[in-house]
Length: 65
Image 1 (cartoon, one colour):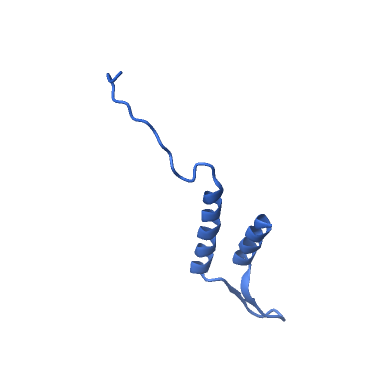
Image 2 (cartoon, rainbow, N blue to C red):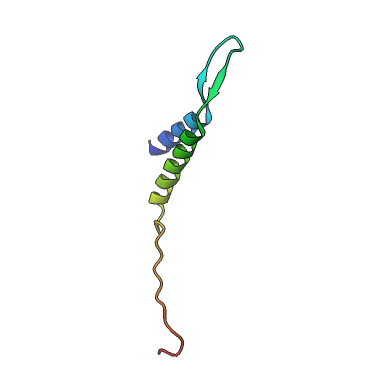
């Protein structure tokens, strides 16, 4: 269900905000709203990742055996 919700959000962000008939006007979503939708979907994808953006490394200086 979450994937279908993500697809719905993406489709709504890409589609028109308003439309009129008889070869009338079409209004696109504001750029800020499209950016917010992209950030939201990217953050959800990042939260699902295994590493979640953190990487731990052990630093060993040379000659320290």
